[in-house]
Image (cartoon, rainbow, N blue to C red; front, side, top):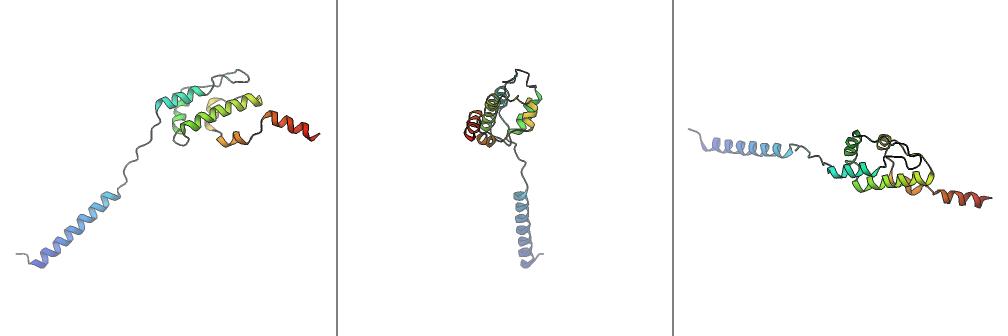
Length: 133
């Protein structure tokens, strides 16, 4: 026969173990659900980069492997920023008469969107040169 003190002790131990198990379950790290980029975003970004250089009309070297890289980059850069970077880069190359990078090189060295805001246009550079003389 178990006396009342032993029953109380066992009840407290059981309650303690139950709380510990609940805490362990709460502390378990739930696997992260990766934010998947919508497939149409990847396709639109891929299509936004010209397949030919806007200056020299040479191929930009686009291939299907670039889509995997775009998926990875969409975890760090938003869709709208990505599109804006491509458009600003294309316009910058057109204005400055600079050859466009190969698409995989562009993706590996994605320019910061703020770089395009700091560069003076060709017209401003010419005006500055004329004003100094």
